[in-house]
Image (cartoon, rainbow, N blue to C red; front, side, top):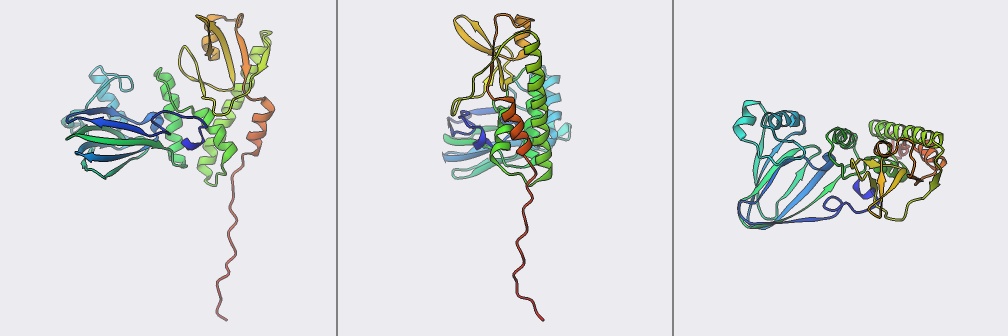
Length: 286
């Protein structure tokens, strides 16, 4: 999925290098928006991994809360006995030079280097309903936790609808729901802006242009950008933050990246793909 973002997300759809001295630690975390990751140790030393299946992340979150540590914002390294008491299973293994570790969607993990070693890693998004569902759920939860989702899931969903054919009914249903909800939100936003007498100017998107995030709350801002000048810089806002500063949107420029007709066309064209089975040409016995 990440090849359809259309722009670089450093360390996710580009390669990241970890240069480690003995004892270097990567604290506990799930990957950004629960995407899978690939990690290769190119040596010369070993790394030790600890991992917990996605289904148990809530138990680790509760342990963080009990210890007054933020699960998303804080730095934490679980005590194994605490996990065992909560019946949370833990994978523990050594990654030797040349070993590749696949971190599945939503897997909680923490890593320490045993020796001097270098690791290269990047994220991937398999085109499955499970991966997409976990990514969107974390995207929504991040909003509630005031934590930035560095994968712009709305922008990505529209690109997927434009670029790929989906044959899995579950993945199709999830994608179509996201498109419908954001289309509805765009229509309501445009209606509100026009009711305030504010002119919506068409801006469009540049090739490889990065997705936009609110300069205040850091949530993804899709299609309708509210621009306000701050310290001689033009800063993008979401509608909620724009209204906090100016309830009637006075002094705010409103830009549109996609015409509503274009989005409606993408939505209508996105249909469940049904592959036609090839005819059976095998010889038959008479």
